[in-house]
Image (cartoon, rainbow, N blue to C red):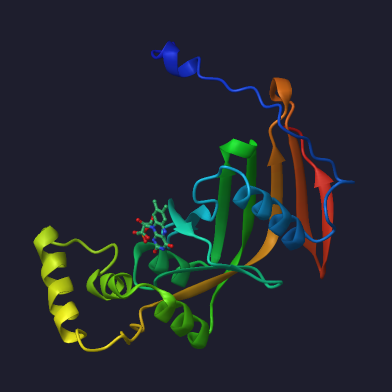
Length: 217
Ligand SMILES: Cc1cc2nc3c(=O)[nH]c(=O)nc-3n(C[C@H](O)[C@H](O)[C@H](O)COP(=O)(O)O)c2cc1C
């Protein structure tokens, strides 16, 4: 095979913004994640909480999409979605998932792997009610990941629901919508370096503690 698009092949960024060593990082990957996340918030990163969620179906087929990180605790990372979506179906069958953050402005990538659990219903209710009313109605109106005939189908459902809830600020959370908690067993913090000699610091959970190592770039 010869390369067809030399202009694509020539896109190349040299990374010079920072460095990372095992002696710099926190012993706890969640604290290290919070440190980097804080730095992303305070730099020019647009939507630093946007992350790629990869799931694997019951037929062993992987798929990826962006979701938004909505909470971080000592237990792990939380996001919200439709439990009956394609990703919801995947996670029902296979709770092993991967998350990926890419913050190009900081020349950083974070990979996280682990097992998924449902958040408790009270947390899902609280977050659902904190969303704007139109987003709550949108979440009810959209049978996420299912085929629909056209856009009118959605807009009609939104109109009907808006009418149903016109006198109320409380739009109840549908049972099929809520949070997931990813309990991590693996983190990789990647810092771009010059000449492709990037830094990769990995945390692997062994029993109840974290083993920190460096990987070749
Ligand atoms: C910036 C961005 C943020 C998103 N955040 C969410 C989210 O928090 N939850 C969600 O269910 N989908 C979110 N989406 C939409 C998903 O990427 C995806 O289209 C949807 O969840 C359906 O995925 P699925 O069919 O694989 O289940 C977001 C998309 C983008 C581009």
